[in-house]
Length: 144
Image 1 (cartoon, rainbow, N blue to C red):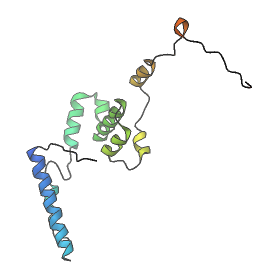
Image 2 (image 1 turned 30 degrees about the vertical axis):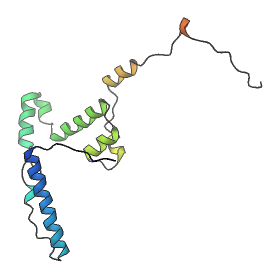
Image 3 (image 1 turned 30 degrees about the horizontal axis):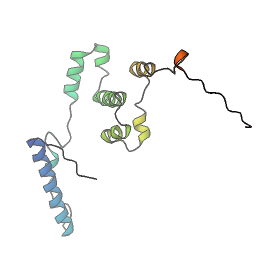
Image 4 (image 1 turned 135 degrees about the vertical axis):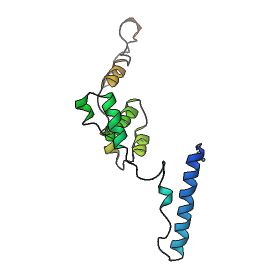
């Protein structure tokens, strides 16, 4: 199996380099018996770290949804919608499982729901042919 090459933006490359350097420092300190002395700095910033986007999500929901829906809306709805959308588009279920961070495929499969799009696709499947264009083969005798 060959290597996979993924392009990184300069900002993402810088963040990845900081994390790798941090892990190397931690590995050396652990090998020297020093315990955990490495700073947690690489996990801060726009790519890594804990972020709270509740205010921004709430503001966007209020602008786009009726008030009764906007009050109940949360970021988890966006995540669920994206997972469901990927599955509906025919994405590989194992790939969606990995991207969603699910340990069990059964968790990902809960996002598979019957929907209008799936019904249209099912109805578009060709029916078995009938009429003049069908070749009839004689039935074979069970005993013979």
